[in-house]
Image (cartoon, rainbow, N blue to C red):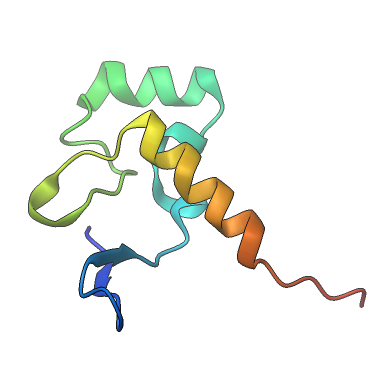
Amino acid sequence: MSSLVLHPKTGKPVFFNQIQLHHISYLDTDVRELLLSIFGESKSPRNVYFSYRTPITAEEITEINAVYQQVQTSFSW
């Protein structure tokens, strides 16, 4: 699954999906290791990639998380 749009000012690809719901790195360690042992990363039923199935690195996930923290909106209700 790729979820990219072009940034309106820079024209560069921007990841916009809720990566926490789809990327395998957000699973508990035991669940992630089990899925990887059964399916491998490329056929995992739960994973997300950049376009052309380019893997998202741990460093990129850290950056995505930081951006999410900067732009998040919370409601008290």
